[in-house]
Length: 309
View 1 (tube, rainbow, N blue to C red):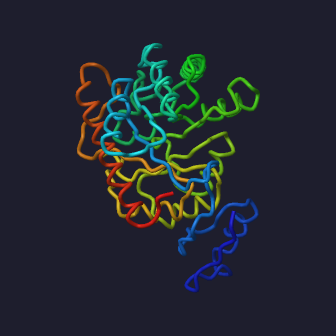
View 2 (view 1 turned 90 degrees about the vertical axis):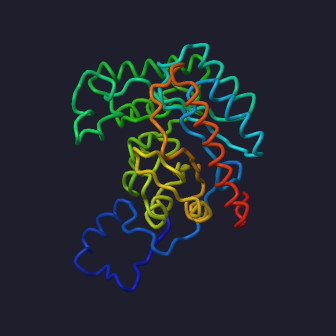
C-alpha cells in the first residue's frame, strides 16, 4: 500500500481525523486517489493488462470467439461464462477446458447455484437484486462446493464466485489442499467490490482476482489498486443490467492506474443470456463475436496511445 497525502482542500486534522486514524491503523486506504498515481504493479509475466471476453456460454460460443479474434487479430487471455457449471454437460466442460489449454487461455465458469434461481422471492423483489448471486441456505452452499469440486475433477482451474461465504470456503479449501494452489477464485461483478476495505476483505478470504463495480471513477479504482496487489477486472463496456457503461477512451488510463488489470468487453443493448442453451444459440454466438469486436476497439485505444504492453 502506498502512502497518500491529502490535497490542500482537505485537512486530515479536521473532523475526520479519528476516522482517518482508525483506517490507517488497520492498513486501509483512507481516501480516493485523486492524484491518479501510476500503478507499478504487474501480472506475473510482466504485463500491465489482459483482455477478458465474458459471457462465453459453452464450447460453440468459445469456438466462435476464437474465430472472430483470429479474423480481427485480437489477442485475449481469459474467457468467462455466466450460466454456471451445472448448466453444462461434462463433455461441454471438458471441451472448454481443452480449448483453453490449446490456446493458452484461462477458462472461468460461474458456480451454478444462486439465489435468483431458487424458490425464494427476495432476489426477484424490487430491492432484492443484490441477493441474486448469493447462496440461499446451507444446502446451496453444499451444492456450490460440489459444483466446484466436480468441475475441478474435469480439469477446470478457475471459477467465478458470487457469494462471500462460498469465497471463504473455497479460499480455505485452497489453503488445506482440497483445491490446487493455482486454482483461481474470481469474484463476480454481482458481488461488487467498490472500495479499498472491501478489496482487502475479499483478498483475505482468498480472492485471486477482483471484479470491480462497473461505475467506479479512476480515482476510486486507483485507491483499490493501492490497497491490493491481485489483478482487478473492469468492464470497459458493461451490460445494461449493470449500468451499461461505455468507457473505451478511458482504457489507457484504466491500465495506467489499475495494472494489473483484466479489461472486459460485453455488449450494451443486448438481451440477457443466462442460462444459455440451444434455444438461443444464435444469439449467444452473435453477441460473443460482437464482444470480440468491442475488444478490438479497446485494443486499438491501447495501441494508439502507447500501452501495447
